Image (tube, rainbow, N blue to C red):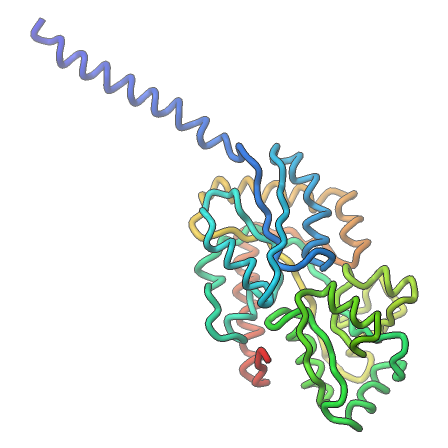
Length: 328
């Protein structure tokens, strides 16, 4: 009878440990057990939103939970990214953001409320897309050389729209202005969709937009493409020259999109999300839809995506310092 308390303590401890092991396994395997919110950092109709809508149904199937897309535009993507940063690091709030907010804004803007390299968990890149130097149908110059000649004749007299201060489209517009040696008034919009609409309507003569927003309108003759910003011509528009071919040798700038979460996410959750996105992006049907709107799928491991963000941050920060670009 004197041994009974010790035996009971050992039995109780063993039972507690066994119960902890049994209960811990389902907890780890349960993710996701409720809907996942995907914050899109630009308005509906723009390229980031298009990518989200293409992926949404298949991700819901792969993860077994609804994917709730929520648009939080503004401040070059900063508003949406900040919402991700401030969310719980449990995998139930993630963001689809573009190159601007993830690599450019900290160098270009003052008082950015987050550090992409410290406050976010990279999950995967989604894809990349060439930008388009677009013009209204009524705009007199028919090509880039005529545009540059006109702009040099009236410094500051032409305006060019872009997708928001700090976005890759903003950097591309500034790089075009700097490389061409012309004076252009920068007009920021809240995403590529609104830029495209205003250029098409003739409210603004020029715009740097992207293929997901503009490709269908260009094919329908409602918008005119003067050039693409990639190093090579885009497969979707093989007849449209590059800016490098149009008198600006070496010009290259593309936009890209990626999935991020708040810092501190469990590695198992990151791996689960990465696997779902990579699987979806590699499926022919989804790849075809993404290519059809002007982007190229580019899935990565979390480690590859982190290294890519670091290298892109270095590239754009050096450009901003060299050219003295401002988020005006």
